[in-house]
Image (tube, rainbow over the protein chains, first blue to last red):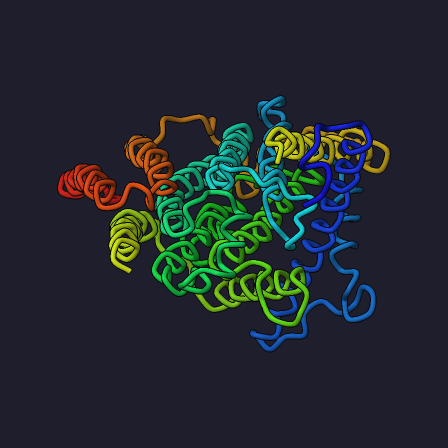
Length: 330
Length: 121
């Protein structure tokens, strides 16, 4: 626990946490850059390709080159689009993606983590703000593909948000707190061990719902390249497009961090330092998602919606009751 | 632990989240990128053909039904969270109360299922 959390805020503390937040931002941007490279390499290996290997040694600068290319591309706004909405939509999509990172406890001495008491609920609330950015982008483009993509992503994300919220409930019931830091600290001395053990059903539901929230491959209907031409960001170019992509990958990072904190014990682990355990566990979750992306075919629209409402919601309700009984009698 | 300090940290993240895209799109971008809009570039993409009509058409009502269902269940989650935090102190009483609440909502879900609201056609 560091001084700024216990004493009234002074100018020096404020400066300190602003610098700290900027460091977190830069670290996340670098992580996201290498996440994208890891995705392309990993999927390349699964498909027996080499993956990017031209820019920099072993392709290490590929993503930096891509970002630079996007930065010097012309920013085209279609004549028929709603100018103001079209400009603001990628920013609305990006801001909550970055804001949720304030809640992630990377280490035991959570220097730049907001230990909010409503932590998990705040995460869910923020992640649903992004939906507005996607729908707004799709609507403002005045393009039929974008509109279909935006509507699909809204329907999909609101449907999968319910099982996601319900699957976290089991963890909250066992830990007796919504504070993510407390939940992680609890897992080091809980009678059940890491919460993936008592909450295995919750973890599976959380993983599936999270993949759908990220518009990740078996559920990537909103941006199906082959039929919708990237969906809600068809008309976007240059850096506005980059911010849509960036918010998606920052969410990937945030989702892996949340899964690690809630189910896999966060920074708990023997021998190695806490931040390294956190990095290893979240990297494994990210690799699992890449693996799913490389192997699963895209689902059909009706299967997608009925899977959320007819399978995931009843299963997660059942999980809440099971957890309730478990903590009553164990 | 002072709670307000956590909110200040979240506000700083909010400010940085706004500054990064605004700075790179509106400050850094115009210096680096070309600006040469032509009529052809600014036309709406539609598989390389002239766009037919407007995209703002009436949309399938099914999305609206899902939105209504979503509101009901999202409010349910908002009620379940405070209950989950206090579950250890509430014990069997809290479990029974919530069982009644969940069963009522499950009946609602079963009704929607039966009425074929959940079928996507």
